[in-house]
Image 1 (tube, rainbow, N blue to C red):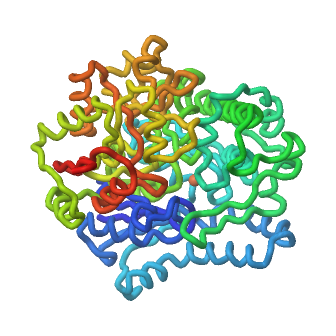
Image 2 (cartoon, helix red, strand yellow):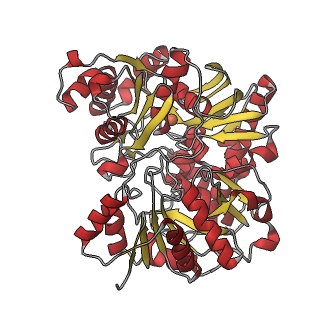
Image 3 (tube, helix red, strand yellow):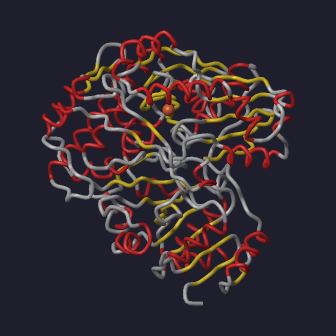
Length: 578
Ligand SMILES: [Fe+2]
C-alpha cells in the first residue's frame, strides 16, 4: 500500500511517501526549485517521491494534504464575516483560491502530471494541519505512549494543539485558537527587529543571548498565560486579527506582511530598519522575547504533563525549531525524553499526513522509527563522477577507509571542507550529508566561514557535531539530539577547547552522531578525534545563501563560487587550485 502526503499552498511545501508503513522518501520542494521555503505546489518533490518508490501517480492507494478546509469551519466563517470589510478584494480572492485548490487536489495532480482523473484510483484525505504535525512527531517516534505538542504560527486556524498518543491513536486534549499564537509573537518581533524574511526567527534566537531580558514584563503583557495550559495575546500589539496580514508567494518564497501593530511600536519605540546597526535595545528585546516564549512553552508542557502523567514527549510545529527552548525542556518540566520531529515545521506535515492515514485512519500497526532525517535524494559514485567530469575540475578517488581519514586531516589542518554524502536531509538542518565541516578548535573559523562562504550575521553561532558516546564529556546534558534541535550548555572547562562552536552564553546547538544512524559521518568525526583528541567538528549547512544543495552539480557550483578549500563528494575529492 502506497501513501503520498503533501504540504502545499503553504510555506515549506513538501512531499513524503510511505509503503506499508515504511518511510520511503520525504523532501522539501525548495531543494528542487531552489526558492527558499518554497510555497505553492510541491511538484518536483512529488516526482522525486514517486521515483524513489518506483511507482506512478496512478499506483497510489491514498493521497493526503495537511490542510482541511472544513476543519474549524465555524470559526473561519465567523472570521470572514467580521473581517471581510477590512480585507482587500484581492486578499479575499487569494484566500478563497487557496481553499479551492486544497479541495481540488485531484484536479491539480491530474493537470500537473498530465493524466486523466479516472486514472487516479487513490482515496483522497484532508488531514487537519495540527493533527498532521502531531502524527509526524508520534507515529515515527520511539514511544508507545507519549504526550504530544504541536506549536506554531497558524494552520487551519489553530496555533497550538496538545494530545496524548497511544499505539496507533492520538487523542487531542486541548488547543489554542486564532488569533492567539506564540509563533505570531515571534514573527512579529522578528519583523520589528528588522529581519523581514520568512524563517528569520532563528536569527533572533541566535541574537537573544547577547541581550538582557529587561523587557520581560512587556512580553508578559503581550502574551499572557491562563489556566489549563492556555495563553492569550494582547491583540492591541498585532494586526493579523484586525486588518489581516497577507502571505504571498509570487516568486516562490513566501512573504508575510507586517504583523506587529503601531501600538507595538509605541511600546518599544520605532522599528529597526533592515540593515541598521544592532543596539542593546534590539538585543534586549530578543532576549525578553526568547525568555517569554520559554515561559509560555513550559506553562503548556507542565499542564500537559499534569494532564497525562507521562514523561515522554513528542514535539512538532514551527516553534519546535526553537532549539534553545527545546534544550531547556528537560530542565524546566517533568519530561524525561523528547522526540522532536526533524522536519518540525510545515514540511514535516507531509510526513505526518502519511502516518495519520496509515496509523490513525486505517489503524495499521506502527513499525517505523525515524532516527535521522536522511530521506532525500542520493547520488551514486558514478553519477558524482559524471558531474565532476562535466565540471572540468581535477579530482581524486579514495577508498571508503581513505575518504574519512583524508577529510579529517584537512579539517584538522584548518581547511573549509564541503561534505556531500548519501541521502539529503529532510528539514532545515544539514546533518552530515549536505554539510560544510571545519575545525571547532580554531576560534577564527567562525569569521573565516562567514567571510568566505556563509555571509551570515556575525552574531549567529555555528553548530557542533559530537560523537554520541562523548556528549557527556563536553555538554551539561546528554539526552540525544540526532537532528540538531537541542541547545545545551557546553561544560565550562571545555569552552576554550571548541571556541568556534561555543555561543556567547556558553551554549551549543549540538548534533549527537551515532554509527547506527550515519556511519560515514560518525567515522569522519572519529578520525578527526583520533588526530586531535577532540570528538567534535563544526557542521554548517552546504549552501551560500540559497536552499541547501541537493545534487552534485549544485555542490560543485557552490564550491566554485565560494572559497571552500576542498570538496568531498561521495568517494571523490576536489581541491581548490588543483
Ligand atoms: Fe504548522
